[in-house]
Amino acid sequence: AAQGLFSVATSHSPPHLGDNQPFAFFKNHTMSLKDQITEDMKTAMRAKDSERLGTIRLLLAACKQKEVDERVVLDDAAVVAIVDKLIKQRKDSVEAFVKAERMDLADKESAEIKVLQAYLPQRLSADEVLVEVRAIVAELGATGPGDMGKVMGVVKTRLAGKAEMGTVSAAVKTALAG
Image 1 (cartoon, rainbow, N blue to C red):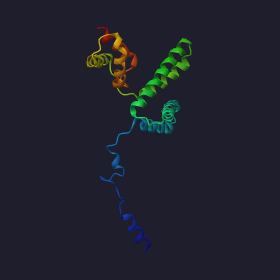
Image 2: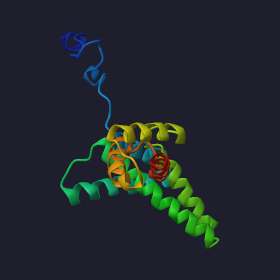
Image 3: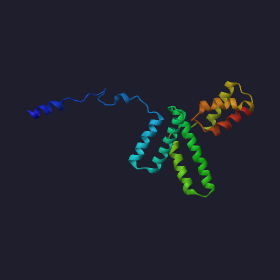
Image 4: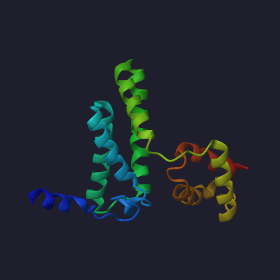
């Protein structure tokens, strides 16, 4: 009798949400960049990849600091801006360490740059940046170097995360010069 009761209890399949997949409602959901970084941290923990884990924790700490300071929830654009800032800091550090002949520290910073670059969107080439900048200059009716501030304000919002600001600044100067 007990065996019959047991077989009745196991004969029913568990309830599912469509297509016999328990998490089908996540199928069309794309992760935010911050969620992806958190998942990558968990993966690095499981793989015991201490260098990658340290860099990802540093990135998450910077994101959390920004959220606490400004009392906001960061969107992907804000996270990309933080990643850009951290990469710029690392590049400056690499330069300083190379000048001081500390290649061990320069290599560590370079490894961190590689980890951080994975969270940036595909970058525009210098030619693509120039095309975008020229279109914005024409749209604003900017005529000379005096309009650089106005143009840079618009360019920064449109190309944020898509191009390095050093490249963007050079393209704006070129576009406004002639």
